[in-house]
Image (cartoon, rainbow, N blue to C red):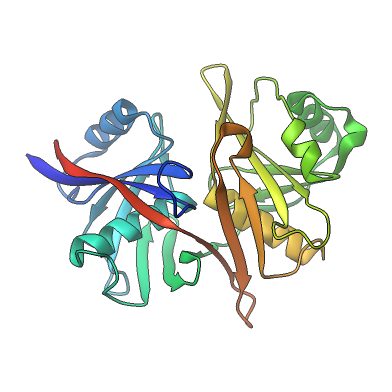
Length: 278
């Protein structure tokens, strides 16, 4: 069966400068094995499959797959899927509701239009708090740095399993050459005061005994924002840069509502439109 598919570049307004996601827009009758096989074949960081929602509060339901596993939530697939869903309903993606509710394994996630593009409401953390000293020492080893270079460390897991370290500045983040990692590791460091960019972010995940660096990571930026804002290391709004070392120029725009809800926004642009036989 031929199904519509879009490849959407996320956290950028310039094609091929962000993080791509493949969105299969008619995945209702596919089973888990079929979805996982296709995501493995696509070999992108994530592939999503859109289906009708199971609750009246949601506009659509998605399942999110890496090449090897299903995720309950991920940030750039959320924005990319919403972009594709809106575009499939309206040729240029400009029509439709201002707030969309996405159903995924992590629950209901709100997505709204923002000045920077589309924004998702950060889901609650499933694990937070300080990291014990033996693990911090291990994270330093994985990052290829001395333990004294880590300013702080925190669990910032909103589904994928993130643990994060804070370095002194953005240059220290950009200099990292990590060893093979065995955890989902986020690294963040601030730019100088007055810079238009607040922080540099990098994300490293284990794969096949080595390390893969994610170009731009919505879930990590969401959970880092919770940590940085709560500890007074950042004030909203701010912009995080990610993907610099990979030749990308991803930008995650962080803002908050008066009730404390954190929103993560970024540009979205369709790069490929077509059909896939599934």
